[in-house]
Length: 245
Image (tube, rainbow, N blue to C red; front, side):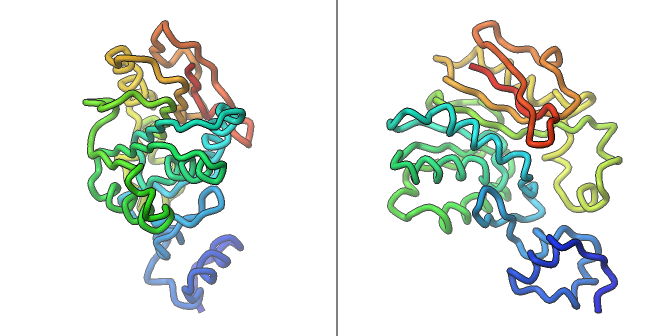
């Protein structure tokens, strides 16, 4: 019998993926998604590893926001997911559009080659082979050297203020990649870096969705004047998404 106290979700997750709950003590407090190598997001199973964040339920609203934006259309789009990690956000958008008979182009960017390898595995598992050519993996930072300006840009960049990292749940601090969590002094560093690069683009993305910390307000961000901005809350009523149009 394991000494670790598991939640109902953790028990169901381990059992679903064939892991005995009686023999997990050697994993200590490792998140169950890393034990199985799989995380559930927007109704699909994605491969994850300690090189990638575990996708959160709160982030699923990003997909809903994109789908609402293009609800009355039926034309291909170029989607870019910056800081993609496992690819869960970008691939979910791509696959949901595909379910609506819209074949889009998808660019997944990350500075971590290990994360991009996980994203590649998810492409191979979730995307029909004949459509994999519609997806590009790029080991690049933020918006550097874009080959094309996307219609829709989404990014879940590190946004936790540095001083709050140590207050996060122990499994998050001990097992999830710090590179994907630490957003600098007030959590806005990388987000503002991305915003500063928007002026270098040859055209304006139609919609940009950036996940932010619950403490962030619009005043935290250096938003280019060509955009209108709003903050949208998550399913728990907390500030979570900065939307630019």
